[in-house]
Image 1 (cartoon, rainbow, N blue to C red):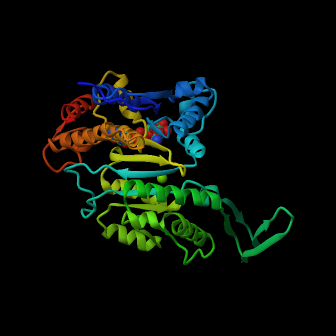
Image 2: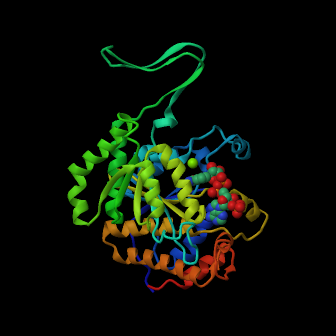
Image 3: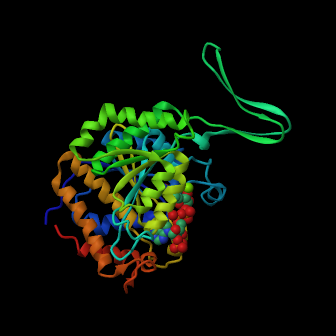
Length: 398
Ligand code: NAP
Ligand code: MG
């Protein structure tokens, strides 16, 4: 059999158990069928330390240049990791660095596996959550005040002119919070959401609370509306898709009653809360895929979970672990499918579909990893990661 050829994508290797799965996925599932062509960047913590984290920025630049990347989970160092890896300094999260460089938005989509029913049984299609990743309460300035006094909000423009509003006249102790966002950041977020909705051929919801926040949330609502009307309305109509704004509380109620199958864009805090609710309700973090999309159309695929440290320590003790490779495998198929789409390399896109079908068939046949076995209603056999991947490879039909 001749293997499928492809143009390069950026490959970002990572840490711990997911680094082990990474190699197994390539060796067992991908390389027998595809002449993998990647620009390899080792984002393992040791190499980030050796390169003073330059490697992360280089990888981000490669994604921008090649348009498509696939990333393994990586350790975000904390004090314990500083000691464990004798690090020169406490590096920032690679995901944060890459997201900032690409000005991207993260879309998280659950993988619906046969036999695993979401907590909300009407959800027959995935709900993708898009979280705005800049500002609001995450960049807020806060004060705790004592006694009587006036809290004000003041904006001083570059000519020294002041605009002032009273927040509250305090008679007693209180708390105050000042937060901000940047219109260009909201615009990038909106464009990434509209672009992604078009590529996924799914409708887009955006929710906020403009009835209460008549300036701040209204600016989000207006930005989405303006960009939609000026740039995307026709394209959405051609594809029979809709853009729908509703209040966050109404959106929550509608989502619960829905069948899924849409993209839900949210402000930073709403996305923090609801993306975990949605992933838990769909099954497990090990079945959650994630893609970073930039407003100029670059795509970086990864699993939503971390490096699965506890399994890695078992692996180091010589145990074979039953770590779920689905989300990491789907990161690869997502990236290869996108490469195929951009280059009209139909064989490559078809291969991605075939791998995902094979994975579903494997689960349907009752062969799963330990975490999935706990979620399955039917009788099934829990196998180690390597066996699970071999079973998938056996079922690939191209
Ligand atoms: P985690 O790696 O997601 O794992 C938490 C727990 O969830 C695991 O111990 C395991 O539970 C279960 N789990 C997650 N993925 C699984 C999989 N594929 N198969 C089976 N079980 C899975 O989160 P963490 O332990 O909080 O973080 C570990 C490291 O990952 C940290 O250093 C963190 O910085 C990093 N991290 C990276 C990313 C990223 O690169 N995108 C994201 C999050 C965290 P059991 O042990 O009960 O089986
Ligand atoms: Mg959170």
